[in-house]
Structures are given as C-alpha cells and as structure tokens.
View: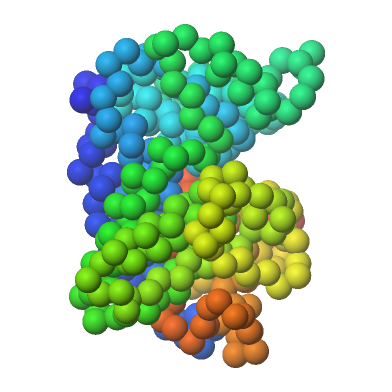
Length: 327
C-alpha cells in the first residue's frame, strides 16, 4: 500500500499509545500519549488521517489541503502523501519571508517530504477556505480534497480506534467513569470521540461505563466551536462539554500566562506543545477547581488529558517566547 522507502506503517498509526500520570491542580491526571505514535505522523492528525491509509484509492495521485504554513496538518498530510505516493498541494494565505528564508518546524518537514506549498494569489478575493473549496469543485477524478485540519467524516475511523483504546485502558483500571479533556481547534477530535462513546456505550453490555469529553476553544471562542460541532452533526447530544474561564486567547499570539503554564506542565517530565496545550491546561485547571459547577459533568471524576502531539512546532514558538519573555 505504501510508497517505497516509507518509514511509517499502518501498525504505527493504530498503535495503542501508553498512558502516563502527572500531578496537576492537586489532582492525579492521566495523560494519553498520542504524541508517541510516530515522530513523523503523531497526535490527532495521525488519528484523523488513518482512513486515508486503510482505504484503497486506486485512481488518486494528488491530495489537496490547506491551512497555516506551520500547521501540524501540513506535516502530517505531507507524510501521508509520501506514504501513498501522492503529490500534496497545500494552499496557504501567505508564507512569511522569514520562514521562506529560514525554513523550520512543520513547514520544513513538509518540504522535506515533497509538499508543494502554494500561496493564495493576491488578486483572488475571499478567504482561503472558500478559495480552496472552489478549487476542490474543479478537481479531477485523480485528486482528493481534505478540509482544513481533517475536519470531515473520514476522521471518525481513527478516532474510534482511539476511543476503543481508552475504553480498554479503563477496563484494565477497573474504571467506570472518566472525564477526557482535550483542547480544540475545529473540535473535530472532541466531537467524534464524544459521539463514539455515546453510541458505543449505549449498545455495550456494560452501560454503566461513562466517558465525558470535555474541551475548550483555542481558536475563535466558544460560539465558533459550537458552530463547528453543528457543522459536523445536527445531534447536540454528541456535542462535548465546553469549558471557559471567560478569557479569550488569540491563536498563535504570545501570552505570558500560556508560557508560564507550558513551563509548569513540562516540569512533569512530559513535553507538551506551545499552541493548544497551554490553553488546555489553563482551562483544565479551571474545570478542576472545586467551585466549578456544571449540570452535565462532574469534575470529581478521574480525568485523562489527551496529548495530541504537535511538538515539531515548539522550537520556533519557544524562540519567540524567549525573545519576548526570556529563558
């Protein structure tokens, strides 16, 4: 199935990643280490793109994607395309001159895996999403289009594999209740996990097992995240619980509170990434506070944090933080 010389296999992608422990907010927190799937194909992007590795696409020779030139999905799509022997055309709004002259992180990794990274023409109006959607409508039969960050039904296959691994771990721990926490961009991972747990456990022989998926918005705020959920399903019972402390964090913008939280959680011995995880842990701490109240979730249940990878972008992000705030 895979291109000659590929160093990632389907066995890597579907691996049952380990669960570690850390002490946080005066609680024991379990950490599902999806960052350890594979150095070139890890975290939620590996889960989301599993479908494109397991299915046959005999006529496809090109994949079309879009997003940020430093997005985790860019690197993962480049690896996916290389595995399948496809060409990747990845569209972006703009590539900074500094990044062009000093390739690094996901951008460099994608180039090294043969990605064709294309800037949206300046004369073209409208946003990147609509521009690439128009390109996709004109795509030939040998091209496949993947929405930004893998926000599509195809993502369900790999996330259901992850869900089964979490349920298996709970069984080994004799655990019947769990709060699964993860930060969200489009919310695809959180939504499909919650949908899986609701559907699977309602049909299982042990209906007393319950998993609540809890998330927070790292891009665009709570209304944006709720809208993304609704785009993926009209059934609100599958929507994860959203936690907010009232502060809106601007994606990619340096924030001292986020920097301090990142250094604090990395002291646990586990390296987390610098865009989503700091906001995730800030909101997790808010959720675990004894004064937090919600009708649909109980914050005294055992909690697992889903580590979704993304570490390749840390060096460039950390350099920005050090320049602003010091070592």
